Image 1 (cartoon, rainbow, N blue to C red):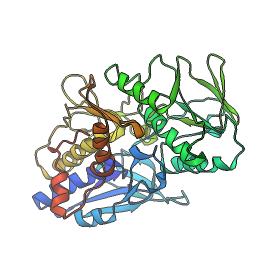
Image 2 (image 1 turned 90 degrees about the vertical axis):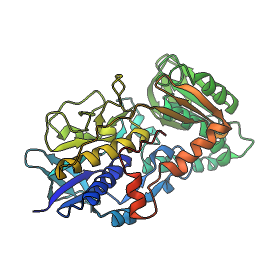
Image 3 (image 1 turned 60 degrees about the horizontal axis):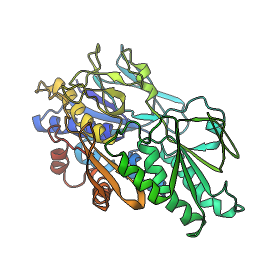
Length: 403
């Protein structure tokens, strides 16, 4: 009887899980294992680029890749997971009505993460974000529409809540995006708000001087040590009582693993990620693996854990797919390991900053780093092309991508 590896999610981790599993099954010549991937559409959303203009174009089709590699695509949304009976309830992607149960022999949960919106008054009603394509597209449309409004300081001001990785990249893009919409001579005011006492609190001291220099030269200002407490149609109020008049608020703080992780009866961390062993099997379960943003996975033996980023998701996917397939065909499992960690932070027209190591030592900055960042964002993270053999070569879990 044919067995099924079921992958949930067509993001970076889900795509590479399916390709890596297909690679091993093809390699050993096994004919009785199906690899099926469930997602609303057969497309990869290039999420790391959604702070840019025209985010609705940040997708890449996956049909041909699936056809070449023998991966079955199931269109739909996962509503529930029954680990005991090894079934997944899939609903229609449009109507959301329950449609059918799909069985599996092994499950890979690669459903990604979503922006975690705290209970702040007016946040859902008045703030934008760049977490998903439709949300980023709404912001893009809003920015383009501002020129039709009467010129005021509020119209020309954008507040970015959260000075982490996404907040910094978004802030660095906003001066140019606003001037494109309002005119090159427009007096644009871009303000970063951060509750912590430093910009990029999770990025550490290493790249901070480069980041602050770039933001200053771009005309971005910041307010530290006081977070947002409320948002209305005229602006934002901070914890220190200050009120900033603005028509544009962009929330960038905090991501949380897909709510589908709560359907798995296993331990999760404070981001909702499932604890996994070095082979990415969910601890305490025999038939479920988690990967990408759904996995709390050690990258090395030094106490470092994967970040919720495409850099780690791609390699986590390769490992999860291989190990699930290896378990079914009796091949050697390859424990996930990604000891080299890098960051490449886009700083808009100014350039970028590239660091290596968990202590984030700056290796490149300015135009040189921007060239690398452009290669990452427009080439490296996109789905592979070429022949099936070319794709399988890139799906090898021993091929570690660090950016």
